[in-house]
Image (cartoon, rainbow over all chains, first blue to last red; front, side, top):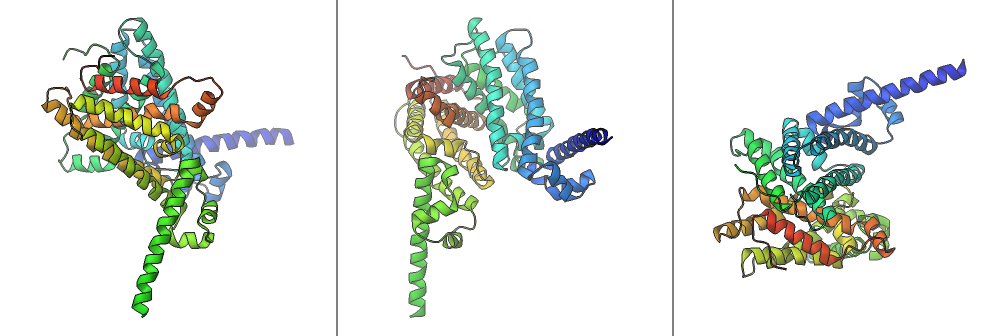
Length: 213
Length: 213
């Protein structure tokens, strides 16, 4: 009997933990990590702030889990395109277009994941996930070199360059000041421009033929 | 008399503040932001930890100032090469080679500046300094386009891509695990490889002719 209720309690704990993560992700999607305060989150979940701390020791720990959940989804979405069939250069272009479009459709979350200043625990996850992205590109680069489509001296380094270029290209257009400028009509940069510039940059950088306009 | 001693006191405060920043930079150069604790720093400077907090409200504030001091030096060193005379593509290559070489000669500091997980105040400075680097590249890209050497659709976005590529290319080779692997003989990546791969990547990406080997 006591064993049984212990198991039930573990299930309930697990369920509550999942609910907290889902509410936390909703907050970050809406207002970035700046909107993820333990107090506001406890209210969303409908529990006391103290109970929240029984599940996550600190805001940094929670933020790092939210980051990992959201980033894992992006890595998988990119992997699906990069590993699809077709020529490596076409897959690279399609992967970049999809990555930019997904960021564009959830700008606040994308900025939070890529660059929002936040706890060092999130910075640590950023380093790990950038390696995960780089590994996907290494795979594709090596396939492209084998197919004679890419000319790449060192796939590990070039993959890192791609990851950095993609992230940095999006930071400016996604950043809150850019959004304000766009809404006020000062900035006309749209997804098509950003996506196309990024694709051209990356295809050239890996020595692929540029796509015909 | 009281005015006079007030001025003296301001001078002394200013002098002590400078000394704290210099000691803090020495710590970060040696062991990264991880080595920058208020207690150890107070010992280096020879003051009480409490006095340190009279000059810098928090470790984050101090870390952000150390970051800005060190980054400003790097921006100026890069600007000197990118704005020198010569063809824009040669200046781009020289700037990249110098940037990598400077990072290589002070790896721990370079990793701290580029990617070490640390207080959000430093992340904020990182965003600002990346814009400063991007502005230097915008200048050079526009010169190169005018000279017919570069083909760049959107200099702002391409400059951001360059900044991201450069930073990310260096993170791996500079990171503490990479250093351990190199020292143990598992990793042979040297400055020449990294620098040459980065130059090739960037020159191709901006549509410049590749340098002859």
